[in-house]
Length: 75
View 1 (cartoon, one colour):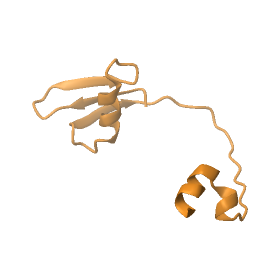
View 2 (spheres, rainbow, N blue to C red):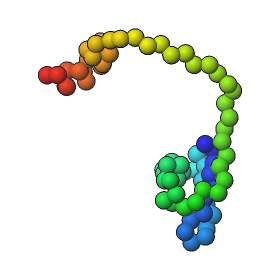
View 3 (cartoon, helix red, strand yellow):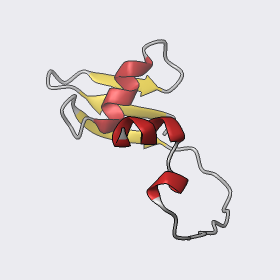
View 4 (spheres, rainbow, N blue to C red):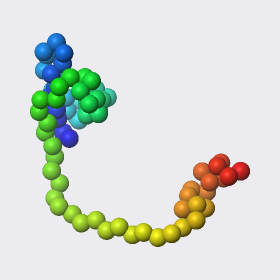
């Protein structure tokens, strides 16, 4: 998401972008579920199509975890 416009409870329309100095407000608005206002428009950046491949395998907890984290949990 590059930009969004939202209407606050007092009727003011705010336009926030990911390039603003106050990026915290932009990120909060993207996750606010309407708590900061009603989202009235969104500008998205599209990416070219790509393929993903999933590789699954079984591993023990010790083999799959970072040694430092494992040592904190188990010792």
